[in-house]
Image (cartoon, rainbow, N blue to C red; front, side, top):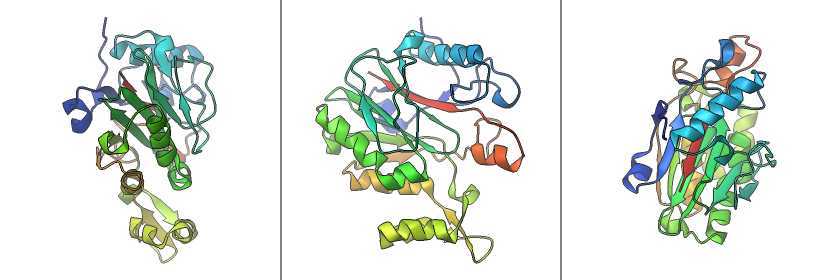
Length: 257
């Protein structure tokens, strides 16, 4: 039986009948800093609470907990194919692709950009985690390439960038901007002036959308929700750091056939 949790959805994916969810921090059992739907095994939360939260996320799709496939995320450009769910045996990487009904592809984030992708005609779905490093190093292209190897076509893929840190909340050093521009002068447009001459404001969702377009995914959208600014709804690494908190919860974004 499906057990619905509070979640955001993409109009693009919903219109195509793709089952997916960008879960918020609400609807779980975790306490304190992790209240309440913390789905990150790598956090300092009680393991039994994380397990129950992940069970609830799987039940949102009417599936058992072992159906959820997420990676041990390392800010890489590594995409894995999940012929079946690997449950708790999480490989290192930052994207999961499947053609198997009943497998839930999931990505964890707490300011980084979660991306859900689908080629409904080919029966291929994917979830990717794109922080600034993974996005710059090519996790989007790697995910699209793995989907293509599984039978998808980039021009048919639908993609949605979920809640992540917005440009207004993402202050970085000028050296950070220089690293991007060294890869491509055109990337300068994703950096706005900061509060001081040595600071910039980085547009992570805009950069991810650009990387999707570069991978020939022409139908993509960003939900436009700021994890750092919306404490009631989302976990945020940056917000936790600024508050001097020891840790933070992880949000789950998930998609399944």
